[in-house]
Length: 166
Image 1 (cartoon, helix red, strand yellow):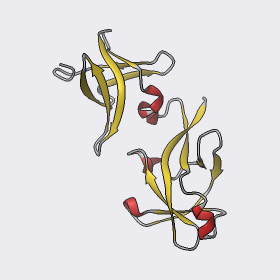
Image 2 (cartoon, helix red, strand yellow; image 1 turned 90 degrees about the vertical axis):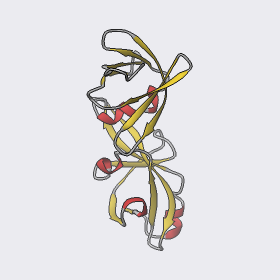
Image 3 (cartoon, one colour; image 1 turned 90 degrees about the horizontal axis):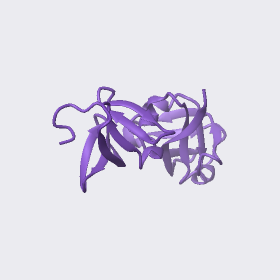
């Protein structure tokens, strides 16, 4: 199974004097990936693996300390870099991959719906923004509606409930 790196947060600030950094989550599922192998870099090609030594604080005020960062100067050198999680092709996070922008959206019986133009992360779930006849349709990214995502074909198959796409 092939793995790839997916951006889950951005390092935004140095915090304290002992090398801690503040991060801004980029995805709603951020907490699900914090305990897994992490990588840091300005892009996925240049990313290197990091070990999380300690997490302090709560919610948006969390601070991360990575092994090897001991000073504020070292922490400041991390600002602007992305925090990546290693994911497989079958990982559910792929449902909100930026690589899907531009994909065609069809119903499970083959009826064309439109084109995926954006994604939003809401508190309850993520949402696809579909362009259809100069209108935008919002489709919740939940298993009951999103049936299949084919990256190679650039195709998303949905099973819409009554009134969802009208």
